[in-house]
Image (cartoon, rainbow, N blue to C red; front, side, top):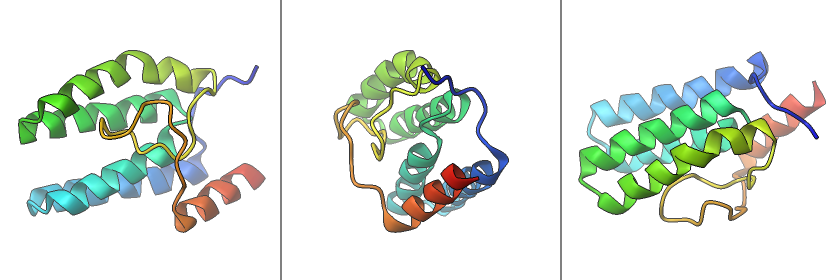
Length: 123
């Protein structure tokens, strides 16, 4: 069994860029684009416990900000199990992390993120 603990630095830069874009759009109150980048951070970080958990934490805060009870409850559930699923490398690749999709559903990964993830896996 493979254990994931720390995100590789090559991948972490891309993850942090998505978080930065999320914050930038959130500050501009462009909630659609903010959420889009938060989902992308989830896709990039979901195999690593800290990054995975942090993406869900931000999604929980976003849900509170929107007064979206479904999102808040969905994120609370994901916060309880997401980190340890990452640790044992048992995550549904491509899942965007929001409560609008089942927690264990694999999803198509955007082409640009596939390239990033493939480059990380080669190194």
